Length: 148
Image 1 (tube, helix red, strand yellow):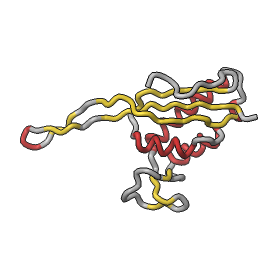
Image 2 (image 1 turned 180 degrees about the horizontal axis):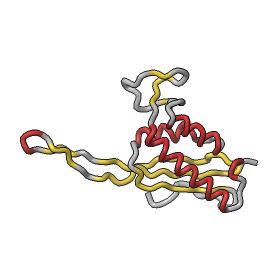
Image 3 (image 1 turned 90 degrees about the vertical axis):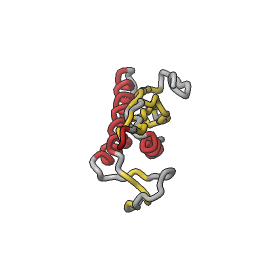
């Protein structure tokens, strides 16, 4: 991923990107779907609730064998991915404040998770063999826009 996926007006938007974060791509896609279009403060509080195991994230794509949670259906609590996405969201909010925009009156216009580089690794097995044990990374992009 070279940069951002959308062109935006720099006078009304703020953006941030997190590159090659060692989190689950599947969990990060579901979290991005959960907070897209929300107010920034609401989105940050939702992610803090996921980290505190108070709010489950609905799993819509990869849900075979996932237990149902009250009010959402199949869901989980992806703490590591929620923390990483919350940090990128807070960086975008800080960028908005730096630009002189009203950071509390902004909504999440774009939040996307793209696959990053795969860090190769190996797991030792029996009889001197080994299996691949790779670490996937994710690039998170966030674009906030001012609400009129």
